Amino acid sequence: MGGFSFASVILSYFLVGGGLFLGALVTAALGIEAQYVAVVVIAIGTFIGGFIAARASRGSTIIEPAIGAVAVVGTVVAMIATTDLGKMIWAFARDESMKSVAVMGGASVVGAVVGAFLSEKLLGEATRSSLPWIIYTAFATFGTCVLGTIFASIVFVQRGQAEAAVSDVGMGLVVGIGGGCLVAGLAIGASARERPLLASLLGGGIGLAAFFYLVHHYTAHATGGPERDALIGLAIIAFGGALVTMIGTAIGWAAVGRKHAG
Image (cartoon, rainbow, N blue to C red; front, side, top):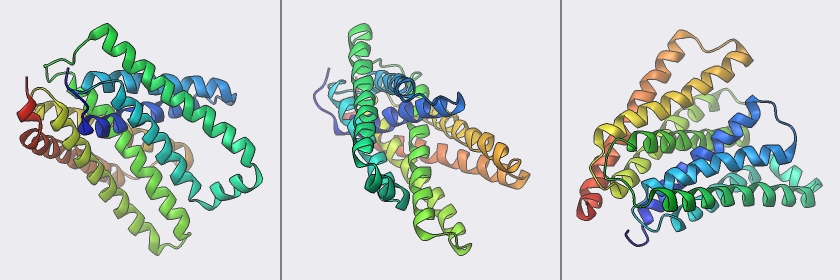
């Protein structure tokens, strides 16, 4: 087992984020309103993310997912806090907001750490096979897409409802997802013990396809669904994101991963 790996922290950030958002989506899909039930579901999501992060990490396994979990929670809280709605909630319900953030954030971090701990204890050192990286990459790109969407949505709200801003936000979302896939790919290539190029391509495609399926699913309920051209556009973006993930993986492997292979 290697020492601390910064690449694994970045990868854990995306993986735990994928688990966190998966838990949040399950909570919304099931219509769960009880706060503590929602906390448990989200903690299960970060548990899965932490478990996978430990499998993907070439470093200390528990430290990296813990840092990644804290970073994800901090990112989400910071982005929400910058919105007018977030500021209003903080102004009128500061104590309740602090309690909710502490409970949700604490549960997320604990879930990720417990998942990483059990992963290391039950399964030991990370595998040298590239096949599991399909799952790792799918989770990482899913987390990347959701983070990019949250950021783009906040930018839209902050800029107002002007139609001129819509195309800019759409382009920002595409660029954000592309940049996130590249960074995720770099972290994957740097963390893997064998070169997982095909696995990163397949996993990236799966993660992006799952994300856009959710976009289509919720859009269909709200507006009747996007048009055929929009679906084709989403498919093109998913394929492009998968390619970018593979390119990032190739660069990360050549720059870092290959030196520590085996």
